[in-house]
Image: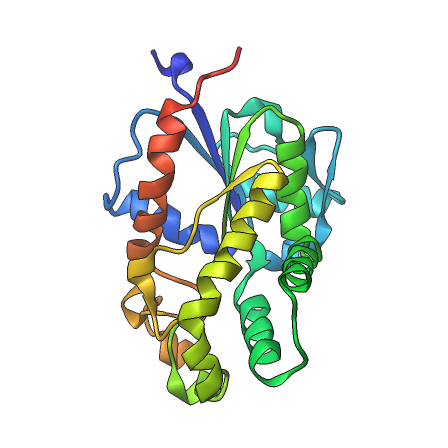
Length: 248
């Protein structure tokens, strides 16, 4: 019976398009759940707030924009209406945090492990999308999964100077620690981290061009990713969603 299936909501900015494309193209099996999308382009995230157990637009115009892309025309997103919520992208960036830490570690003053943790934690909480995700998790109703925005697509012409040779050499030792801290922080805030799949990463801190959007060079769009990337994320999410108990 459909009303016994777990309810999964994808909440995100324009980065959730890769998930929808993966579903539409049949690249991933999304059966076994009631799947719903609620999101809009990132600029509208400035007009969202968390209150009373839900993500609310702060004005009617924004509410209508989000409702337009939701099958049920939802004007706001109550956590309690779902069993699992995947927060996809949602203007939660890690690349700049990781790159900044690497630069400081290699070319700046000494950073203790405690200070690294503080920088990453503050960097996450300083992003509105992270605070919205944490608010949903704090309701203790839906299980919240967080998939931050993936690394920029590799492009030496645009990012060739982002990493010095010293920073590149430090990547194998530093990145696992960065990810560990992020994963622990996310868990402490009541969420489950969905990490960027290892097979999509090249040169340590970039995404393989195989996962770039079409015509990414012409569009200078190194941030968004394609349906193949979305499928890899959903492959991590769907087993979790299918096993979630449906609340009354």
